[in-house]
Structures are given as structure tokens and as C-alpha cells.
Amino acid sequence: GDSVTQTEGLVTLTEGLPVMLNCTYQSTYSPFLFWYVQHLNEAPKLLLKSFTDNKRPEHQGFHATLHKSSSSFHLQKSSAQLSDSALYYCALSRDYGNEKITFGAGTKLTIKP
Amino acid sequence: ETAVFQTPNYHVTQVGNEVSFNCKQTLGHDTMYWYKQDSKKLLKIMFSYNNKQLIVNETVPRRFSPQSSDKAHLNLRIKSVEPEDSAVYLCASSYLGGNTQYFGPGTRLLVL
Image (cartoon, rainbow over all chains, first blue to last red; front, side, top):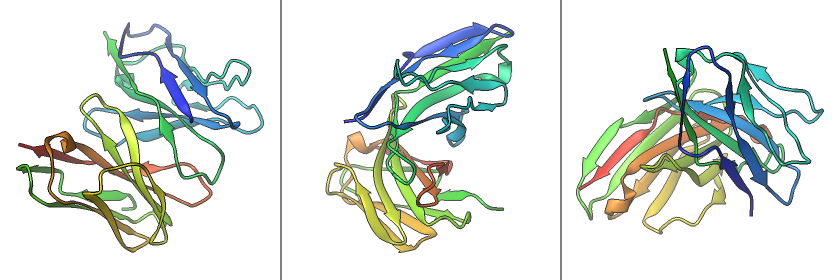
């Protein structure tokens, strides 16, 4: 079956430093990849999703590149902000129109001053 | 305001009781979902409905049953709750064929 593996547990960074959260996946299909973000006591929200034409999605300073050769979709940001502290989920779906999304275990990112 | 709404926010009950959670979306979507987020923050899909029809049914205990009156509402009933049911239950919605899901704020269940 499909699976998603993320940077484990807790990542703590100092404000202003670059962010990289790892995400690798396994799927017998050619899936679409997503990053969802969940701030404390809020609902998860879509942050990024992969494109079919290999464009690099960007939002709120975050970007991720889908590398099919290495089955990866790492999340990056050049300079962390305090407001980036949240729980980040990498997820995949097999194709557009497939309603089942498989989520990774989540990575809690904490940004310190 | 267009969003996904869930009630109650928080519910405490005892083992063996029945509980019911409500979810409504005003986004005009035709597909709705229930997820369970456990204490380790693992997020797993339980059910998915499209226009009142069940389309995804993961392996969940039979005491869980979704109920849909129309495409904007998807409720979740748990008969005879058990301690391991303590979790946050998240409702989400999307268009069928689109894969951006919009989540509600969740219902936190504590089973004593």
C-alpha cells in the first residue's frame, strides 16, 4: 500500500535559519504530494501541492520539489519565522479524483527567537 | 462565512456510552470525510462520502457509523465508546475530482 515517511518527531530551529522537513513516499502509482500545516488548536490547512508539470509549488515562503527518482517531496524555507511553528504533515493521493489521502506521521516544527 | 463546522468542540463521556458528532460544510463541496487524529497526532481517514454515498470505508470498528443527510452534512456516531476512542475527530470536505481537502476545527473526545 501507499506510505509516507517524514522527518521524525520534533524539529527546533532558531528564527532566521533555513527550514527543511524531509518527506519520502512509497506508492505503486505516480502520486500527487501535499504538505498540510496545523497550527496549535486549529484545523489542518493545505500549504502546498505538487504539480503535474514539474513546476515547484510555493506558498508563504515555503516550497517543495517533487523528485520522482528519489520519491521525495521535502519542504523548504530559506528563513524561518516564529509564526512557522506548527505541525506539518506530508501526504499523498494516487491521482486527482482519488479521495483517499495518506498522511505521514507529522513533524512538529518549533521556531525559537 | 464559508467553512467546515463541527460540533461539539469537546466531549467527555464514559466507557459504553453512545456519542454523536456533527459536521456541516458551506463550501458547496460534494465530498466529505471523517479523520481520527490520535494522541501522537497520527491522522487517519475513517470514512468518505460523496453526495450521501459511502465511497471510502477504512477498517474501523463496527461501533463507528457515519450518517449523511445531504452533501453538506456528515455526522459520526460511536456506539458504546471505548478508551482507545479518545482522540480528535476531524471532518473535511472537497470536490470530487479535486484533492484539496478543507478541514474543520475538530471534536476532541475523552473517554473515561
